[in-house]
Length: 477
Ligand SMILES: [Zn+2]
Image (cartoon, rainbow, N blue to C red):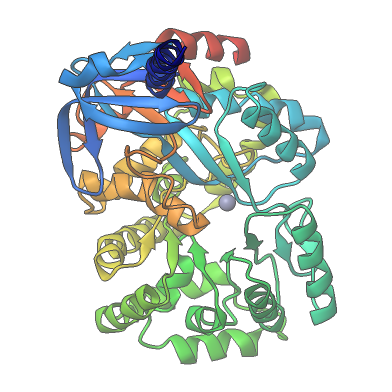
């Protein structure tokens, strides 16, 4: 009897351990023969396999160990380069209720270009965005993971529909309550004409609540005043550029004094004076200070370039227009018209100004500021197409002087730092999110390789090139 019991026990132990072994190695997906792109290390690691369960990387191992990794599905990445999915940290979904479906149809475009996460920086369809986010998370909808600010906070008569209008501390408190109820992932401040006081009050109150703040800034204030109160980031380069002027104080005073006159000085009117007083020494000191504050800057170089060249560019044959609804295409006309109205002199100045802005990027990066890639794609932002435009931004960042590895850092690592989730993204290591893209070529050698996306893995789904083409077909107009 004892012997039988012993035999049974032994059998059970063998079976249990065999069962445990099978369970242990039953992954949902193994990507084999991969050359991993280590963005932070600026190197590639050949002959790797990546074992994935659900949405998490469980193991990364030598290809020789493949027999150990049983999986429901294998992908052969022979000759390909595998890296984390791209993050576009400045996108918009907007245009009102009539355009909710048109915006939703843009989601697959992001995936087709390897964008697995976007940060939505304010619009007028927050409830819809939240429902897409839920559906994407549950695998019911194809699209990137979405972070959203919810509505923008702005002053009286806001430019953008859906913005929350605030002037007093009480209104600001109420607006922040409403954002926290959503809950929004960060606070986006806009400057249609927000007062200096309201702007700084938003930052102070949001900081007390532990909410991140970024956005535009009224020129009646200084970036360092915001940063001292806990401002976390700045969108576009106008605001940091202003702070690089050797005469920032006197120019700011003149702007403040002009506000109650018939001709208040606005952002664009102030740029020539700021340009001619730009100081390398002031810039160097500012960048060091912002780096110490863990400050984030989204340069959005590509949209500036696209809009700057709108006058002389024929976009009528852009292949991506096929994926943009006629309603959204109609919103592109505003920027086209205003570019046509601009004098040659101002167009020339804008180009000069943008070149100087771009030159700040490598300096800010080297100083340690958290530079993040953002395209500003969305309705009203003419010919800045979802997905493709973040490739454009990454290439502009390289053109500004960043190395391919640095530019990819802004698009795969730094966004997760802003969102406070950098432990889960940015590299292909056990424990990290399995959002990844497979490229035909090495992007560290030639940044244009990001255009050749072969496979996208996002939200527990594998999208081959054929899958992506089929997805795009469904949204073609
Ligand atoms: Zn924007």
